[in-house]
Length: 181
Image (cartoon, rainbow, N blue to C red):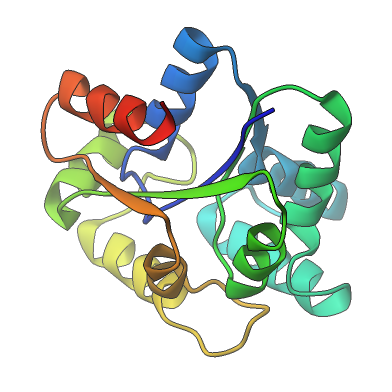
């Protein structure tokens, strides 16, 4: 059984990597975003990126720094199938997963301007913001010392490999295959 976690800034291509692994390699996908959206709905909050960050930070501080990803990891482990957990955002989550013997950790990145264009084009309710708001949201998730808060930059530094998603789909797929096989 292969177990992969993935991190990266917003609209970097995490979903594209997930789709490839699910469709072409038979992986099962476990989504932190979907986990958080369920909790946001339960709390009656608006479904947007700010709510996602607030709820994620709250769950990590209420339970423990790896709570969200731990819940997804336990489901993946129980399935016994090759799995990908998207999206690792806090150092506590990385610490928990790196302790697992069957775990590999990927990051994906692309230039900020390209990522913003992708975010707007995909049309998710959490992505419809100005470029300035996009940058501000990213800075709030990028570099926190608190292990219960998002720190994507530090998580990316812990990755076994960083995939460069500034090129074509074929380029990205080749990097995935080179890493996994």
